[in-house]
Length: 293
Ligand code: ADP
Image (tube, rainbow, N blue to C red; front, top):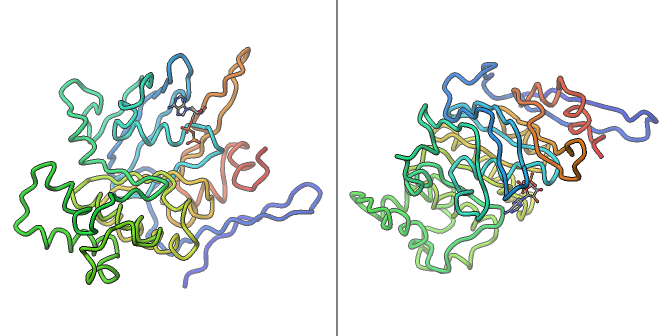
């Protein structure tokens, strides 16, 4: 096993040492994405009059895993929801600036948000399978959007294999999905996302409700999924970001002068090994070494 680079930092008084391991057994990645899926240009997001996120510029690379990290309330979930127009569903939410998806304005008049959410799937913090048989959970999406696979059985099997769940459920496809463990339910949700042939999978803290073993399985799965999909993950677990992602965006929230409102902003975006071993901004360094707050 290749040993990872280690960033060690010591607090002034030497009482505490924090370590973030950055595995680098993976293929090295270029400084900038070879192919861009999303290009964000000066993105601001409001909830009513409240500016939740300001001035985000970011390129998300194809077949890469991009992690959004930062303290609670800095706008990570807000931003990931912009990437498949989930914020359209939140009353008062408004996105300004430009988000291009494969060179096309994601918020353009001709764009159908339903088609956007098919191509850009989402997995949530809490697994949310339908209270239906495992098979139906997977077959539902393809049926609703009118996909006509040669064989639905094959599509269900492929999707469950893609989410590393097939072997565990192949003999109980008629069983209610709610009978599965939390980790299995989350992989079922990933299989459900895969079933409609997406291009991108967004994951908003997908492991925060899971035990360490289930978390490890999802992290291994992400590494496999990125061969076929582009993945964006929000995580408050820095070790997880260091383990799974190729690039990391660090956000924080700061109060504007004369205002009590804290607005989120992107502090630094770089290859994950750089963010964790040689961050440029002091705020990033403080966060990844645990000195934040
Ligand atoms: P994070 O994911 O980093 O914890 P969020 O994106 O959830 O941050 O929240 C960013 C800011 O936007 C916070 O101040 C939060 O209270 C606010 N916010 C999030 N969702 C809504 C909403 N639906 N309506 C109003 N304010 C919201």
